[in-house]
Length: 284
Image (cartoon, rainbow, N blue to C red; front, side):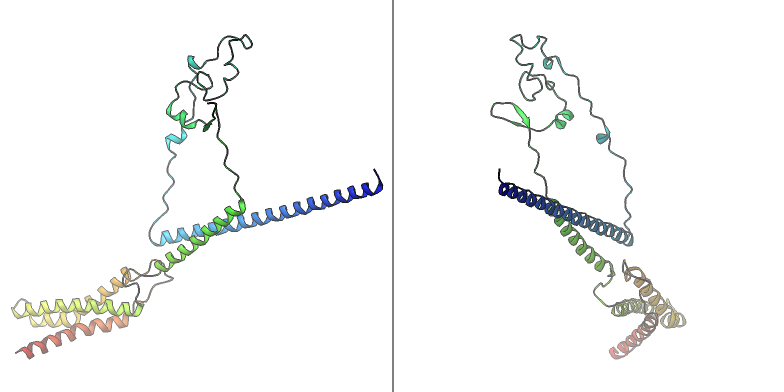
């Protein structure tokens, strides 16, 4: 071999070495990127778990305690002893009539003692899957192809993004109260206090009718119209706002607009009484 051939061989080996080192460096960088992506996804999933726990506690759903393991999963698997039909023949190999002895380890072949003739239901489920060949001999099924970790991480990232989107929607829904969720707090408070004042106005009409037939005297009627019914309407609106006007997740106590509610309730009932008097006089 000449010197030029040795030099060419040396250059080829050097190039192969550099290509191997570059491939190793690229593979190491890919593994580092995969580990970093796995750590990042783990942190995201942990944060999502904590956030879901907070949402569950906010709406009154506690995490159920882990239940005891099922008895079906804890029962050990004990194979039954082989039956007489599956026992190996007593004739030693090589005598001419012991041809089935060498195939005793192949499952699926009739008349062979690899498995018992009658398997229990649980044992049949635990048996390996077999693919029957044209010759009738069962062989183990082929294993699934190896998955690409990059593809799996991308799918996990997309699922995490989808979980974040649904979590944000759940948080927006949790920040809305049950009562009039699309209304502003001020408009909700006005509507609640006005509704309670209207209900108190209906009770006021009942008292007026009762006073007309002599069941309620004038002093009691005046006390209920000026103080009793407005106070009942005000506290009723306060309780309704506290019960159904409070979002499931809110920082602090939502405003209830107490001065506004007091003014509305203590004006609606007397004004309703005045409107009733004007209506009665106008009809007369």
